[in-house]
Structure formats: C-alpha cells, structure tokens
Length: 89
Image 1 (cartoon, rainbow, N blue to C red):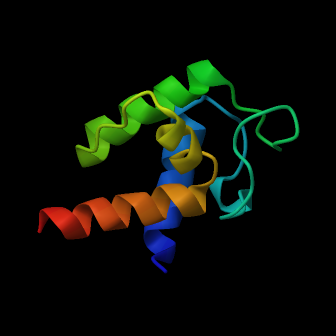
Image 2: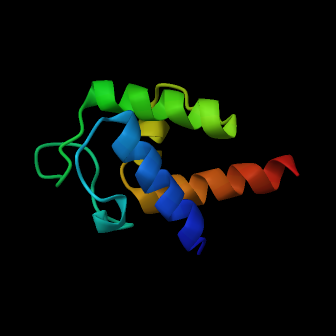
Image 3: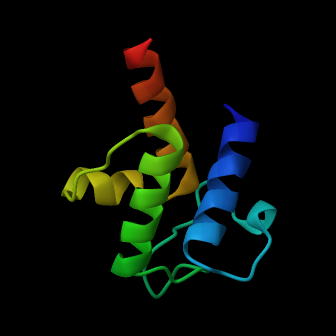
C-alpha cells in the first residue's frame, strides 16, 4: 500500500475539484462521488480528476463503467495507477 501515492491523489482530487478540505481527511475507501459521499463529487468533478490524472501521471481514463469504478475511491484509483505503472515498466 503506497500511502504517499494515496495522499498525493487526495491532494490532486481536492485541487482539481476546488474543494475546501484537508486531503488527509479523505478516507482511502471513502466514496468520492454521489450524494452519500462526503465530498459529493459529480460528473464534472470526475472529468476534472481524469484530466488532472492524465496531466500528472500520463494515465488516460476513458469514459466507461470501469472508469467509474476506478474513480469511486482513492484506494481504487491508487491500485489502478500502480497496476498501470507496473505494466508499463
């Protein structure tokens, strides 16, 4: 488990979505999107996060059900990013 990467992703999400909260306060498995989610991110936020991830890491997330699963939590996103990085090297 890469704690530094997870915190980096949390900061990226907070910045991309212009949320006023401490990135460290976001749980790794906390839902990011929807009315039940503490941050209550929406589809526009998903686009912002996708663009920020592409810009920072070079990982392109296509608009799909799989991407919605990947973006559902910081834990899922970190796992996907680490798997993607491992496959490239």
